[in-house]
Amino acid sequence: MQATGVMAKSDIERRTLRKVVWRLIPFLMICYLLAFIDRGNVGMASLQMNHDLGMSARVFGFGSSLFFISYFFCEVPSNMALQKYGARIWIARIMITWGIVSSATALVQNATTFYILRFLLGAAEAGFFPGVLLYLSYWIPASYRARIVATFMVAIPAASFIGSPISAALLQMDGFWGLRGWHWLFILEGIPTVLLGVVCLFVLTNKPADAKWLNDDERKWLVDALASETKAPKKVLDMPLTKLFRNRYVLCLALVDTCASAAGSTLSVWQPQLLKSFGLSVMQTGLINSIPYAVASVLMVYWGRRSDRSGERRWHTVVPMLLIGGGLFATSLSGSLVPTIFMLCAVLVGAYSFKGPFWALATDMLSNSAVAAGLATINAIANLLGGGLMVNVYGWVKEATGSYALALMPLAVLTLISVATLLMLTRNGQAKHLAGKTETV
Image (cartoon, rainbow, N blue to C red; front, side):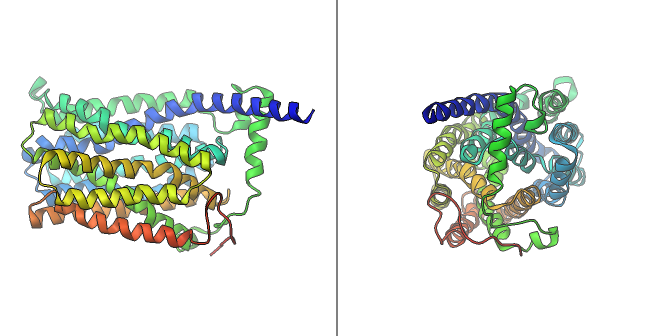
């Protein structure tokens, strides 16, 4: 009887999670894919736009970074709104507004209007990623979370793998109907986001208890499985936002995430120009720019599954960070195209393989009452420092030295600091599961 019970439970588990994954993950991946295409297409657009508008590397870097500044201020309120109004309505709202702003970037006339629209784009998109992480915590048991998050986040490198050639092709529409190629790039890549935002209203279900597409026994198993996880000890309990921003676990996790955020954000903005500096055409730049993202797309899923199978989070987060640092140092010393491509592959494999284990680790540390604000706070700080600050730092160093490669050195130093921070944060042992006292301040 006992064996039969175990088999029955296992069957329910497999059936339920298969339905949940196929219902939610492919759709959310497409949504996130569009988010990163709309966020990062400015890198390809810059190949024409910067010359047309007379923008220097410093001006372009500052304008690009404004996305992350507004993102920082709006992210926590956005995630709290998602918790209040539900993912179905709030994710739809986020996508529709950022799609409109993304298409409106075609109206940019000068540096000032570029600044305004990048700022508005960050405010519109704020809360999407931590909102989806929060949403997945409502549906996916912790033991499956690293592989699911990694699979969902394949959309990030896939956005550049798919988006770079598409953006390069759209730039070839230069002169059609009197518009420049970069105008068409923003217009045509923003419209699908608006349409998919409307589809959210019909696809997403707020909570497992509301899922009519699950059978009664599947729904009950999932609700019970998720409820049982709330009894596990957490390091960060419920607290006011002012204390959450001072919580040492939250701040350390944000610093650690800054490493991968800085590498991914900076390369999404500057990598096309770095590659084009080797004398490539626009189309060649778009195609070669996609290679590191293709490699990262495959390996990040493997790494997330490996972390789940072993139940280990600490070293599955540290190893990708070391790959980021090593790749950045090597790229800064490379003077030819082929070694640079290999090193950029290493950086981006590290940046994206990091994400599944890291966000599973972070979610494990946060109580249910703190998870919405906590995830948003970690991601907001990481985006502000990694995107807002480091994208600017890259522009400053490049302008001072004239070298796209040397401008990667500050990112390499940041990576070493982040590795040391994570090792200290988990030094009491994190071989299988997090343990220790909870912290409320």
